[in-house]
Amino acid sequence: MNANQHIGRGWTGHGAAELQAKGLRHEGTEARSEVARRRRQAMIASLSLIHPHSSAFISGCVLLLAVAATVASAAGLDFEILDKVNWRGEASTTASTRVTETYRYDPVADTLTVSAKFDRKGFAPLPPMLALAIQQGFPIQVDPRPESPGPVCMLGPLTGVKDTDAYTWQLKGLSKYVLSRQIPAAGQASPALVNELTAQVARITQAGHLRPWLFLVNVPGSGAAERGDVYWDNPGEVLYLVAEILPLLRPEDARKLREWMRSERQTFAPESMSTMPYGDGAAREPVSPDKRLIAQWQDKTLAFRTKGPVGAWNLYGLACYYDCTGEKPTPQVMARCTDIVKAQLEHRDWATLYWQRGYTPAFNAIHGVNQLFAGYVGYIRLARLAGDSEAESLGWGLLGRTAALRFAMGKYTQFLHDTHQFNPGYGIGKKNVEFLAEPQTIQVETDAAKYAIPKDPAWWVKAHAGIWMGELVTWSWTRPIDNVRQVERLDETGVDVWEWGGVDCGGTGQKRLNDPRKGFWYKRICPHLLPFRDMTPELAEFLGDHLKPEVRAFCDRIVENQPHWYLTYAEAILSAEISFNLPCDAYGHFLARAWILKETPQTLEKYVDVPWAPTGDLYYLHKLAETIKATNRN
Image (cartoon, rainbow, N blue to C red):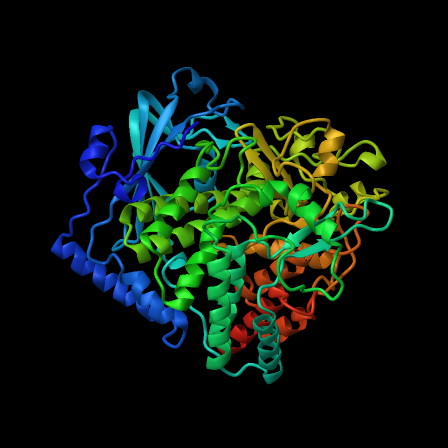
C-alpha cells in the first residue's frame, strides 16, 4: 500500500495549482489578522513555561513563534481498511474499504481535529484501537456521537456512526508535550554529583567520537557472540541524550560539549543514517571486542537495523540539536525529514493505529510506539523551525494518533479483563522446557472459569513453579491492574502481550509466525523490559498525566522480583542463559521513577549507581543529570 499524502507544498514539493490538478487538497495558509493576534498571544504566554536561563529558552522562542502569523494548514492520509480478524462483525458486509483522514491543529484552542471521510455511506467505524482508548477514558470527542453495536475483539470494540460517510474526532492538550519543554538550570545539587557529571563530560569531549557499545549477555556455552545489543548507535539518540546534559554544565564545559555535538551532527547526520558505523571511534569499554565480531554484528546480527531505513525516532534528537545550538534546519534538511516520515508511513494500518505485519517500525510494538511518539514531537518542532506548516499539520495528526495508541497500550490488559478476553492460562506451556511455547490466543471467553482472575493471589508465581525460564512473576495478582503485561506485537492480524521482549539478534526485526517453539526463542534471545525503553521527557509527562497507576504497577513488579534492580551488572532475572540485566532496564526504570513517580533526589542518587563503561556511558550521564534536575526542582 502506498502512502498517499493529501497535503500541500511543504510535503510534496508541488504548488497549489499543481496539487489541485492532481486531485490533491491544499488548504489555505494566508494570515488573518484576528486569528494571528490570538495565536501570538497564546504562543508568547507559553514561553513562560520554558526556563529563562536554559539554552531551550532562546531557541524555544524561535520554535514557538516561527509560524505565529499564519493560519494552520491541513494534512491528510489515505488508508485501506483491513479486517483480518473480523473486528467489524456483521458490519463488514456493508463497510467501507478506504478512508481518508485530514488533520488540522488549532494552536489557540490547542485542539487537533481529525476528519474521517469514507468511500461509501453506511456504518462508519472508528479504528478499534482508537475506540478502545476512548472506552478506557482517553479524552477524545467524536462528532456525531458514536455508538457501540458490537462485537468486541482483541483489537478493540466495534464503535462508529450509522448512516454516514464522515465524522470528526478531536483531542485537546497536545501542545504541552511539544512546546513547553522545561530544563531546570543548575542549583543546589550535590557537588559530588555535579563534579562527577563534569568529569564524565570531559572524558567524552577529550575522546572525540565514541563508537557504539556492543553489549553481550550470553553465559559460556550458549553462543558467546550471538546474544546482546548495541547501545548508542543511533545518531539522533546520542544527540538527545547529550542535549539533556548540556544546560547543567558550566559555560566552558557547555561550549566544548556543544562543539562535540556539532561535529557528531555533521559527521553522522540523523536524517541520513539509521546507525553509526560500529567500528569507528574511540572505545567506551576498557576491553574492546574483536574487530571481526564488531563487523559481524553490524553486517549480519543487527543488519535489519544498520541497513534499514531511517525512522522518525532519529528526528527527535535532531530537533534537540537545533534547540541546543540555536540553528534552524535548512529547506533541504526539512525536506529530508519529511521524506523519512513519508517513507515510514508506507504499510500503515488504520484499524490498529500502527503498521501491517512484516512492516512494523520496531520489533517490540510498545518500544516502537515510544520511539514514534518522540519522533513526531521532533518532527513538529523541526517543521515549526523551518516554517513548514503542512509538515507541522501532518506531525500533529500523527502525534494525536500515536498518543491515543500509547494510551490504549497502557490500558490494554485492563481492557482484556473488562471484555472477558483475559485467560489465566495465556502463554503457559504444558512442558517445563517449553514454557510459553504453546500458541497464544486472545479471544472473548464465555466461561467465567476461563476469564476470571484465580482466587489464589499467588496463582501466577505458582503457575511458574518448576520452570527454568526467568519471568517477572508476582505473589499478588488479584486486580486487573496487576496484569502488567505489555503489547509486544500489534498488527492487523492480532496482538501478543508479555512483560518483556527481546532483541531480534540475527533476525529480520519483525515478528513472525512459525513453529511456536522457534517463536518462543527468537523473541527472548536478549531479554529486556518493555514499557520505558526510549522514553523521552515528553512521553514521560504524557504517561504521568494518563497512565500513572499503570506505571507504578510495573515499577512495583520490578522491585518485587529484584529489589536491587538499579545495580550495574545486576544478575539477569529474565529468559534463560543470560548473564546480566540489560543496561536499558535499570535506565528506563530510573527515568520512570524520576519523571513520572517523582522520587526524591536522595532516592534517585542511590539509583544512579556506577557507569557500565568508564567513558561515554550516556545512560549513566543522563541519570546523573536527572538527579541534579530533581534536586534543583525541589
